[in-house]
Image 1 (cartoon, rainbow, N blue to C red):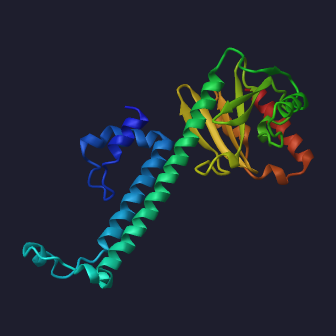
Image 2: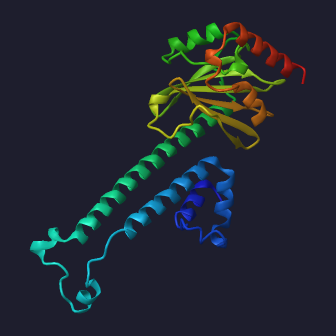
Image 3: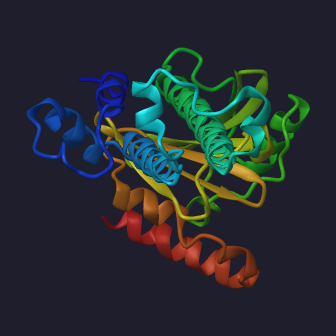
Length: 276
């Protein structure tokens, strides 16, 4: 079962939890526990269903509705329908539901856009032919090349990769935007790819300062936002979550540290990795 199939099944899941033991949902629920993107979508789906249900239950049914229907009569005269409080309550609930639905649809659309972006960057990371358009082993040359190829270079390299000689870089085009990709050596012949995009190119549903991790086959990917940028760090080979956490370091802390302390921390971390 893939993510789309799980979403199709979970759309019928009731927010009160009565379907938790239903075997029809077992596989989809299990996948939601393993897939962070699917889990987030499922939580939003349940929240929307619960809110919409509450809004509808608050609508007051006009008095004598049943008797009027059985008698074949109109409940409310056409000229006086706007004076009935029941209609106003129903209209208000309808507006609330429409507002919630609009927010939910936009949120899902934004989430789908970022998920599509992640998949495209993963494909770029896994490309072996012309993986890097420009080969260089120093940050200044890489930054200059990226700048001349139309991308912003005011990015912040994760603290654990500062001072590490890069392998090269390229510019990845996706949905009308340009994304920087910088390659860094990892362990042995493996490496990690850092993707950098502008946060303004997304309408929301991007990770916050706290990194999010996901397993992609035998590889691992981390994503986070910082200072107007969205970062993806893709580890090839044995780059597990623990190692990516070491590369990323504590978010939103490094910028306030003294430069000498940063250099010292980077050297200590790189030395520790070399002794493994």
